[in-house]
Length: 570
Ligand SMILES: [Zn+2]
Image (cartoon, rainbow, N blue to C red; front, side, top):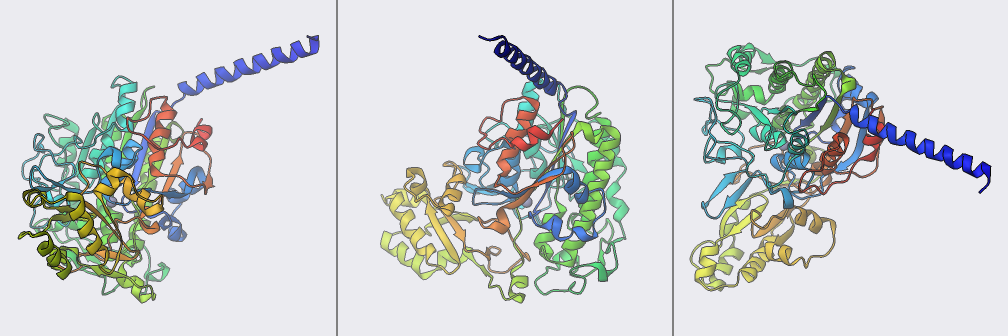
């Protein structure tokens, strides 16, 4: 070996040593705080669509300073709130995390169950349970108890893994207007708070605490919701500045609970039983969530030591506003501008308390949003509502009953996207379940507006062709919770409420681009602004966060690590 070669290998060895040291150093400069923001129903194109009138500190700041994945899509068929939030939390798909739908049918209980209901853990406040007579959230209204816990999430979350990695030294919190927006991301080890539309307070359940921490009591004693009493949701700017300034009043928008279809939307006073609901149908819900998130950061001293803390905030207003007015409405446009202001206020606060350089922000959404069928029709795009609850009365299903010799309805329960057949009668008659599933699925498939039906037997046997729709169906199939038949609607075709009338301007929950498309943005912690167009998935987020803090991925994780994020953090 010549001297020259020896020198260069020594040189190489020292470079290698240097690189190892640098890697070790990276593990020391982990973020002090991970801030995971979920915007309920924020379709991937919406921030850019309305950015013109946005300020500097919110989405524009994220665009300049964040790694923005502009081609992120969910890869399963049932794009609903609890499904998306759990996917973000666990880094896996509903077949594995088990939250296949906001609501599923529990055969042992013989009723539909709400995803995070748990009768063992009651909420800690009196008179704060949902009021069925006023509840707009149709899935939450199906809960059989006021109790809530993450017990139905079948795998660990990123926050659980962070807690395991630091032997519970990391502080972990989740907050949202929606209970399922907070409980999912807080995981099995963190603390979750959500907004009671009955009491106007942020509440929790006995799964998390025996009594409220003093600071939470003090926060609720301020009765911040009441600052909106006798005020209105008004436009931030003059109407002429808005893309939808000349179309405030549209017949497809809902005048839900007399909140009105046009600005100003009056909040009324606290004596009105819908007062707190109105707050959630408007930017006020996000503003209150922000107040509570700031109180968590301050009172729990988040991000103040060398252990990484985790705060998940899910902002729900974009979802309620989208459902009631549609994403292409003056209300949705103003809500986006006010959400931008809320984000700017949050980032400023985090910068003051923790430093954005020490905080890793990740922002995404639990699902996208379809346009309201009425709006699509105005643009000449065909869209329709269909009434699935009438299917038992279809002549074709009546004929099947006759063919199989059964007196009762073959469909025992339906909650989109699953049909649950009457197993008792099928068993009593000695019928073959797979054969009945196949026959019913075939008849439903013939209904106008249905793109595909898939039976649970087909999914278990995995005899399906390898196409996008079947893969999306399989990723949503959990043998214990998914129904006998999965139903996928055609693009721009939606299930209305259970008896034929449309109660919402628009409804998400399908496998099509408008529902699967969400932003994924990482910012802070040394990251630089860049837009990326390679295809990624929201279940990539949790494994990426795990890699950043050197913890193992959540127990069911099947996403990929986003290497640009690891390369970009300081
Ligand atoms: Zn949602």
